[in-house]
Length: 208
Image (cartoon, rainbow, N blue to C red; front, side):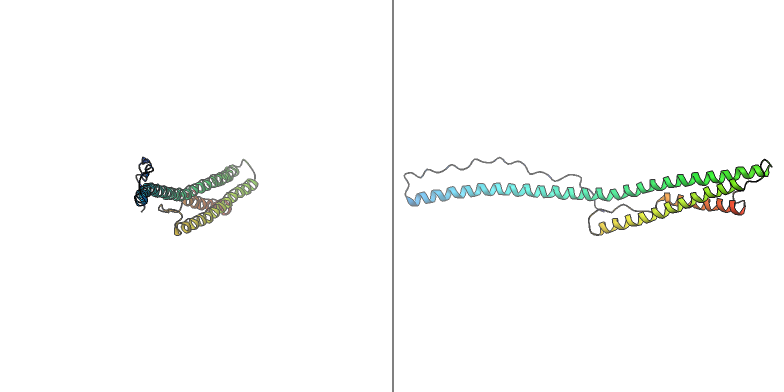
């Protein structure tokens, strides 16, 4: 597993540019002597340029190391953004669960309340409230199924995109990508919703 570097690349020390060699005085020298003197001067200038060139090379390598490190950090941030997107979709599914739970609970409560009133002889018929309660529970179940299907589809597409980018070395994908626990809660609520609708339609006391 790749780890982030503890320290960044070290910047090369600033060099103090030595003064340029002074132009030699060749007055009084013959042609051969002047030629040798100028050759020596050119050699000193060449050495000076070589030192500057080596320092520029060190700076270029430093910039390259910085660029590589920034690229790795960007890849890690992109990898983490997939996890943030996954958690964001979990929150969306939680909103669907809350709404579905409200509809299922409210519909079942209406059904039970008017059923008790009819059994007590307070009302003659509870057919209309019963149908309304069944409609609310059915709506809650339908909304939950649609939300779960959208969640599964989105998660599959997100994981496929993440795996493809990791395969091509565009991101780090070291963290796991498990099935959301929120999804299993939605499955449990869906089973409870089916139990409630069966109890209401067929008048089977599944919940006592």
